[in-house]
Length: 197
Ligand code: GTP
Ligand code: MG
Image (tube, rainbow, N blue to C red; front, side, top):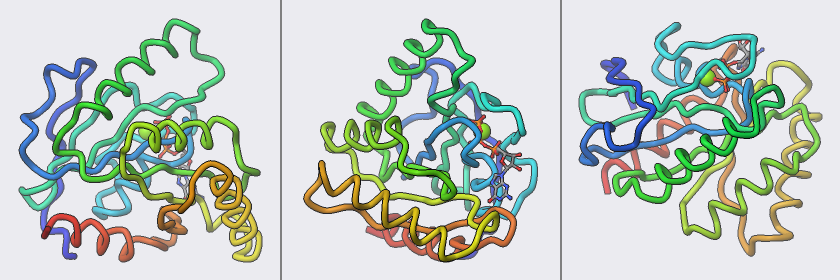
């Protein structure tokens, strides 16, 4: 797919102020600092469109980006940020779970996993919650440029194995780097397929 345009549309803290649920929408979610905002910028090849930071917890709002004037990418705040308060975490859960369960135009959730880590309980639990709620998702392993391909493949295999303990089938995965643009074509191809159905 060719990206002709990518524009910031809006930031929201409340789900009742979101754009009307008309255009196909794809949400990016995962632990704080896993690389959600960087990946969005890499996919649309526009540095600085989604705000990134070395400090976890940068994205605090639901941010909508309008792509090619006919679909949305959505940057969500990260989960599992240790420094946030318990009430913040509860708010995050309420807000994001409401969004994910009720957004009728949401085509797919991309769950981002840091390819350098052992399977994290919080990621497994989140995937499990998506499954329980019947939400379609795909896995994206991030920051692949930071280690060898062998190590990344091992991490992917371990994560898939952990998911196989709770799912009969594990969704497709992508290995990505916002630095080298690995995985870009594959993800855009997948989105294009869903957009045209
Ligand atoms: P929050 O909004 O805080 O939840 O974080 P995020 O998941 O949006 O992460 P963000 O894109 O802001 O990236 C976090 C840090 O990781 C930044 O310093 C990025 O430059 C770095 N980073 C993200 N993706 C990659 C990647 O593929 N390779 C490398 N080397 N660094 C990356
Ligand atoms: Mg972010």
